[in-house]
Image (cartoon, rainbow, N blue to C red):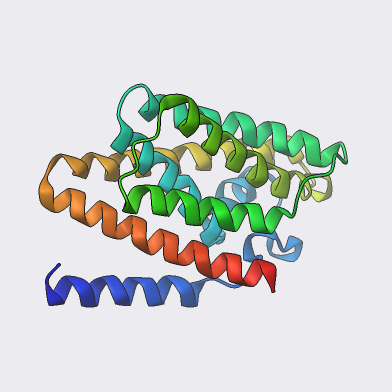
Length: 199
């Protein structure tokens, strides 16, 4: 990687880490109500945004059928996680699970890990469960939880599509290196989130 590219990578990483504050995506006083709030909510937390984009990038890197299966598995399990949270079912520490999702998915992109179909789906499904659980804890406080959920799911799908579009860069050697560098930044952010989650 050339020196200008290294500088750009470091600058982007520093900006990303400075942008994030622990549990930023889960503070109820920052939430708007209804569809617009649900749509904007994933964009307000770096942990959720990076995980959802990473799912799309990794799916595009792995190709068919995972380019379709991973962006489908994540929201389905996210919905189940939301239901589990509203039902009061216990789950291991959610913030740690979310941080690990960013770390693991970023590392999978960085190291170009070609997981078998079944393993990739299980990894993404488990992480979707954690993300959904976090938001399911918030839904009862929403004025219109159904509208909020619809906005959230739409935003999640669009972030997956953005990740897939970025993943198409893998076709060239420069694009592949750029994607792996992006995976490294995502993994670095995930390590930072994990540090804050376990403090």
